[in-house]
Amino acid sequence: MNTNRNSATKRRMGVAFMAGGMAAALNAGALAQTSSSGSSINDATGSSVSGGSASTDRYSNLPPSLVLKGVVRDFIEKSKTGGHPDFELAPKAGFGLFMGMCQDDLDSDGNPVFKSTGFKLSRDFKDASGRKIISRKEYITSQAGDVQGALSSSQGGASTSAERFSQWYRDVPGVNVSKNIEITLVRQPNTNVYSFSDKVDSTYKTRNGFFPINADLFGNSGGSTPNQNFHFTYEVATEFIYEKNKGQVFTFTGDDDVWVFIDGKLVVDLGGVHGALDQSINLDRLSWLQDGKSYQLKVFQAERHRTQSNFRIDTSIVLKSVEPPATTALFD
Image 1 (cartoon, one colour):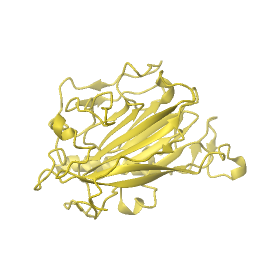
Image 2 (cartoon, helix red, strand yellow):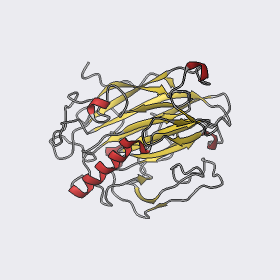
Image 3 (tube, one colour):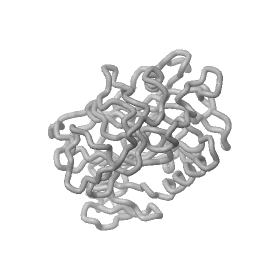
Image 4 (cartoon, one colour):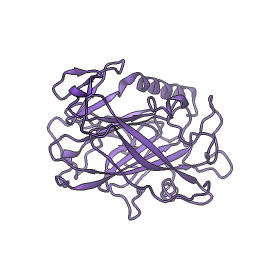
């Protein structure tokens, strides 16, 4: 961010995140918070579990980890020659969460479609469990206890144009370069919860955040200590089997922009330049899903600003690895 105040805000948000504010564990559809030490997880009965032997693990039949394949695209920030105007952009409405930046449906290429420059959030949308959720959508079933949030009535300038937004998740010669990157979700002890966190993963915990292409592609951004690559997008495609009334939940925590689509429909909307924020979707709220059928889940993330890069997934969905989109192969 371009002021000390905003940079400090993002740092404080990141510190809170690292301290375990969203050390989430989803079990039988409930999002249970760990203790501040991150050492225990609540099971479906509300009992505390910590570690435990395989003989007491009710979920030992599940795979220990899930590997998801994705594509990272590197961009040059707007202030440099050949830079992209959306990277290091300061939204005219200020830094924060902006909803409504992309359409509710993916396009024919399976990519997000520009809708607006975003409407800034002033009050969170929540479900009865207190989980933050997307703003009301006609295709997501409302439930008793849902709390209505609030958005600005005018667009906030969190991106610049439809044409430039369309470049975020496409290989565009002269604009970005790309390569394949995998992440591994690990099943948490004695639960059906799979998690990936840059704070825990062996590759990223030494990098102080989700920085998959440090000293790679266009190279590090400069202007920070340590020097990291802060300007990229990342997309992951995966599949799953829907199990009706089993409380399958997907939660994302991170920054900057993040959108999650299930069966081509937007279900997590964390647009804008901000610190680590979270949203969840309970699959039982998606009334068109059919029990036992396979569906696609896609995550689209963008890192557009210095100071931090946070990326965390917590889910009780057994996700399947699928092949990522083809890349430019410029660096093969």
